[in-house]
Length: 89
Image 1 (tube, rainbow, N blue to C red):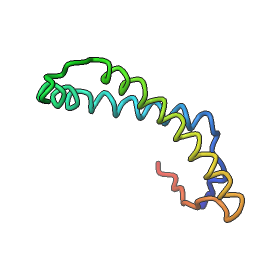
Image 2: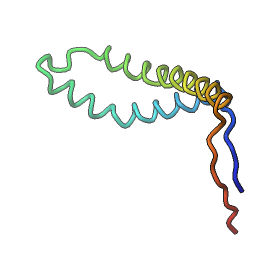
Image 3: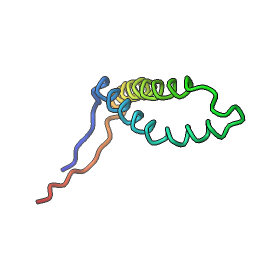
Image 4: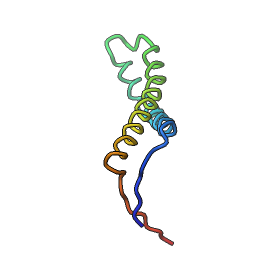
C-alpha cells in the first residue's frame, strides 16, 4: 500500500524534537563534564552545563517546529514523501 506523508502537526513535531534533543543531552552530558574537568580552568563553573541542559531541548523544539512548517510548505508545492506500507501477520 503506497502512502503519502502530506503534513506534520507542527507543535507535536516540536515536542518530539525537544524530547529527542533532551535524550541526546543526557547522552552527551558525561563527555561534556569530563571535557570541562580536564580543561585548563578545571571546570570552574557549572553554569555552562545548566545552559546546555536547558538550551538543547529548547533549540530542538524550535528546530522541529521550523522543519515541520517548512516540510508542510514544500509538500504543498511538490507533494509529500511517498512510501510503501506492508502489513505483516
